[in-house]
Image (cartoon, rainbow, N blue to C red):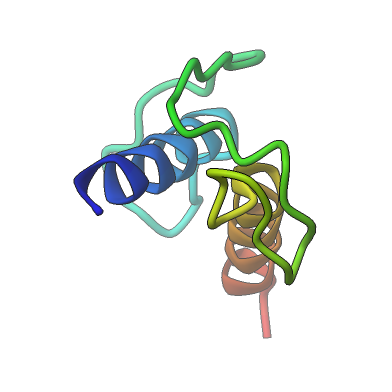
Amino acid sequence: MNAIQGAVGTVCEAVDRVMPSTKTPGSSDPLQRAFVAIRPPGHHCGEDTPSGFCFLNNVAIGAAHGIFLIVLDYPP
């Protein structure tokens, strides 16, 4: 479970560094890109179905986190 939590946290942190929130004061300069080497990578499972040793699809989580950041930053 610690590996899964660490992997998801690392993916979300990478997304945060590439797409920093405009509403967070003191945000650091954004990165151009990020590479996250994590275990388990999540490449065997689908968006909603685990397979092999992969219980979560880290790419789908990163994409959802990025969309969530865009929605939060969108001015009302």
